[in-house]
Image (cartoon, rainbow, N blue to C red):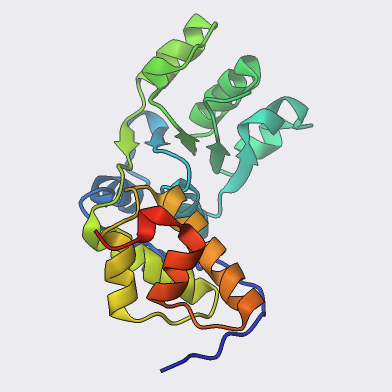
Length: 223
C-alpha cells in the first residue's frame, strides 16, 4: 500500500509521552521524574548529539516552568539574578563555549534562591576543561544521568516517531530493515529519516525498502 506524503514541514513532538524510554535512557528519565528532589539542586544530562537531551529539557521545562538558555549565551544575559529568580533554569551545552564565571554565578544564585539547574553536555563535568576551581567543585557535586546509544527496541520506536513527526507512516518491515543496518546513534537515525523523507517527497514515492537502498547506498543493501 502506497501512502500519501504531504510536504507540510514537521515539528518534533517533545512531550513527556513522546519520550521513548528504554534501557539506554531509563535512568535519565527517572532523574527528571525525581525532580525537585535533586541533590545539590541540580542535574547534568550527558549524551551524544540527538540522544534526547533537549527532549528531556523540554519535559522538565513543562513541569518546572524553567527558563532555557544556551551556555554560550550566559555571558550576554543582562540579569542573571532575574534568571535565577525563575526558580528553575536549564543550561544547554554546558561543556562547550560556556563563560565559567557566568555559570558559577548563576549556579550560586540558584542555590541562594533554592532553585534548580539542569545542565546538558556531551561529557560528564569531570571531563570538562574548567579553569575555575570553584566551578569544578560545584559541578562535582551534581548527579550525572547518562543517555547511552539506543538499543534495537528504542531505535525502532525512534524511527517510527521521527517519521511520524514528519507525518509519514512506515511499515514494520522497513523499520526492521533500518534497525538492522543503521549505526546505533540517535543522530544517524535522525539524518537517515530526514534524507529518506526528502527523497520520497522529491520523487513522489512512498518510503520503501527499495527507496532506502537507492538513497542510503551500499550500507543498506541486503547482507
